[in-house]
Length: 260
Picture 1: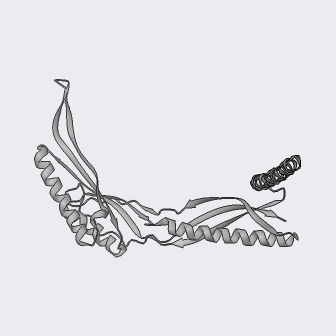
Picture 2 (picture 1 turned 180 degrees about the vertical axis):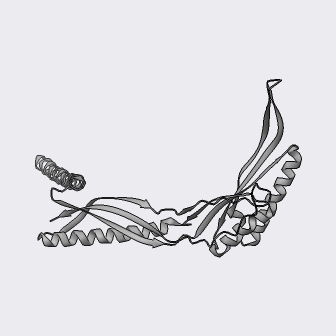
């Protein structure tokens, strides 16, 4: 009986020993995996002691595809209600004409509507009084068909527009051209780094850091001011043919590589 009990205890000890040993091995393996990942992340976060930094520029030439211009009706009179009706009629006629030339509703925006009193000072009474009103209404439009710019600007004074200004050119979707310039800049940077590494008998490793800066694109500006019918000058002459030219989109990048 004692022999059987001893044999039973011996077998139990062996079983528990192997269970403990296997559990310990599993724990050690899991700990090793976790610790290994942590060490890898820590090592990857350290900046390599041997690096090379290069800078490059990417450039693409773009033609503007949007012309923006503002036009204004300035009216003066003693009756503000009559003034508002006459001013609005002129502006509505100008807007309808612009639409007839293919400008979409989304590209027309009222930018200003201002009714201001005109004052005079009475020396005898030493007080100011209202003698009339000035109504100013301004609309911004975007013209996408550049062949229509000269025609539109030339016709507006005949419709009562007495101020035309702020003709600028822009790019509708600059990100497309910025992406092109950026891709060129990074290609040049890597080619430059490879050449430098080869000349110094080293090899490029991973990218450590990179950054970019860009001046975007210059916006050609053409200031225009015309007084047409209803203004203080004679009818405005037909404006010259508008030439938007081209613009440069530039991106500068700096890349730091590990070298081996």
